[in-house]
Each structure stands twice: as structure tokens, then as C-alpha cells.
Image (tube, rainbow, N blue to C red; front, side, top):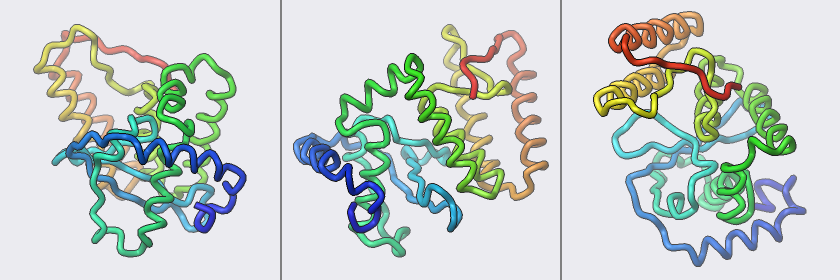
Length: 219
């Protein structure tokens, strides 16, 4: 951590305590695969971490995931040959401890951040850092969405699943969200991306006209 992220040198005792907790934590082995990506060379944030669950191509942020889940994930080192092993560990530690230096602190932050102005300002500042670190508007949208989804935040045009939705609707909604994510990974023109994304969501609403959808807390 001192080598790769010297700006956090004053927090090294906290990282050390968190690492001790990790050493005594039992991994929750699953099918999650971790991938490290780079923002723009001169961006405020140098790296981002994305998880993929099994064969699902839709990525998600693990910033507020239980540490047992992190420890049970896998990393394909052949896809990260440009990183030193110690650097990979440092990047993961930084992402794991974005919201706290214990698993309890992280869970509390995720559960209660909406009530605390200081936490909200940190969330808003991080989104601004993402926008300042990714010049590609599509990729910026992907990274921003991944972060907001972990906090339960949505855009005006997002389609939310009602509490009483049937299993078929939930499955169709998940497939639509996967298609939207893959669209962001494949499309290169932002205007075309926005048009296709809007069409995808419109078609979904037309297929399920009797199920209402509404907005929730927005960013």
C-alpha cells in the first residue's frame, strides 16, 4: 500500500488492522471473478474493480460487499499481467475499504449513508471523480452505474422491479439489464448508445404494460 498508494500513508495503521481481520475471515467461496480496469492516465481515480458472477456478463461493484464474498472470489492473473501481485492486492484492499476499515463499518456505511450528510457528500464526490477520470462517456456511464447500483440509487429512466413482481417479470428484467450492460461494453458512439438503451427499455415496458414502474432515490 505504501508503495502503490503513498497518498494513504497516514491510514496505514487502519489498513493493517483491516488486513488482520481479513486474515481471520473465512472465505465465502462463490463464482465471482474479479477484474481490474484502468481509468484515463491522468484521471483522479487510477483503477476500478468489477465483479462478474458466474457466466453473467453484467459487471458490478463490490465496494459494499461482505469481505467473505471478496475472499471467496477468483482473479485470472493471466488477464492482469501488467500488474504486480502486490499491486493487485493493494488495489483490492483500497476498493474493499472505501467505506470503512472493518467489515462492520462497511455494512453500516451501506445501510445508513443516506441519513448522513457527510457520507452523501463522499458519495457525490466519488461520482464526480469517476466523471473526471473517464473521458469515454459510455464507459463513464458504466462505471457510475456500477457504483450507484451498490447504493440502491437509480436514474429517472431506470425501470424498477415492484415488490410483488412475478418470477417471469424479474427474470425478464434481469435479462434486459444484462443487455443494457452489454450494450455499453459493445457500443462506441454515445448518441447511438443512448438511443439503443432507450429503445431497449421502451420495448421492455411494452412487453409488460400492466406492471407499473416508478422512480426511487436518484443521482
